[in-house]
Image (tube, rainbow, N blue to C red; front, side, top):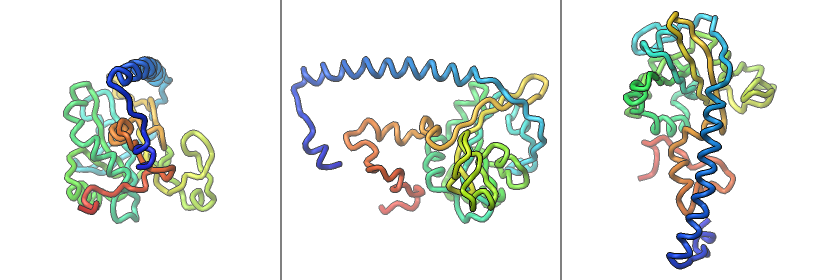
Length: 237
């Protein structure tokens, strides 16, 4: 990548402005298409949640409806932290660095956001303290929730490399996977599932990539994916 940057085309200010104006037209078109996609995403039909789930968190036992905290919309980040893991996934941890602190703003738009993992709540709380985060985090370890929303997989599924993941039968790659799920609660207390995304569907929430993508080197991963990611207290200083 350094060689590519060192040989990059250099022009006058006037030529740069012309090129930038042409790119701006494409950026505006991309924004327009993105707005249409956002509308289509919000227009998806919903599925009523009929199964009872009881999670464990800082407030003790809570149902799915309780997690809304009196609001009508709930975003759950499926954080990869399994029952036998000693620490949370470093990639999920990077994403959590990006959304930590956002709840104070989302609450003013009638939205609650939490993280959820299958590890015992005691481990989640300890790891959250280590990372210095403040967002709510609950354990789904005693429920089928992660399996029902296709972010956890049985030993047989992982061994056979075949499970329903990201809307297709495929190798999930791991017994725990990352994702986002969105729910709505109506005035009668009914809860509905409105949206979920996985794998690269999560990229719209990766604030670090959005910043890297506008730099000359970009992501600089050379097809290896996020190999460079560490927990924020594990980088060489």
